[in-house]
Length: 123
Image (tube, rainbow, N blue to C red; front, top):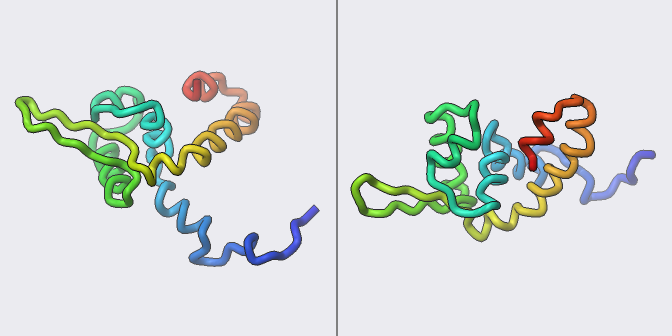
């Protein structure tokens, strides 16, 4: 049954859904945010958790998340340099969205694919 036409359901170009997806819709951004929900991580810790991401791609995704205010990058002045990534308050505000995507994926995407690898990665 279609939903009634209502202003909050309209999504023409420039709508909030499109704007949100533009901010968090990078190939690895959602997964990075998922892992940072667990707590602060160093670059290589994130990279190990995302086996198929290249160093360049992860760097770009983290930079974009930082520029958009979702991630805080903390550099410690020591040798060798130490850099940590954590969620900002704005990034934490995405927690219900990321958790909902995870729940939907477990209920639908995993079932449709019959892929236990996706289920294992989500746990």
